[in-house]
Length: 130
Image (spheres, rainbow, N blue to C red):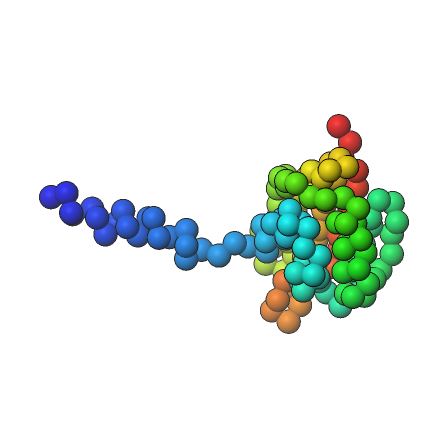
């Protein structure tokens, strides 16, 4: 009788392994790691970036260099996913709070589906106002 529910319990424990993390969470994790190179792989060919009141549209390579510089100046410690919108299959939006050695930053990012792949089209980094 005890083994009757064993297959169901086993399936419940294995289910999280089968569900892959979505792009919003993956970006938050890469922000926590400070991994500009892997993050740039998810960028569109041109990214609208606003980093600490400096706004421009950059190529994928330029965006990676700017983000790498930001991470070198601000070593990430933790990230908290604050808000997410993933109800539209073509557009997603995420907001995360990144704690670094120099303070907290509010990072928002917009993803758009291009050629059946979700890519980052906008990235904003602002100092967190508490």
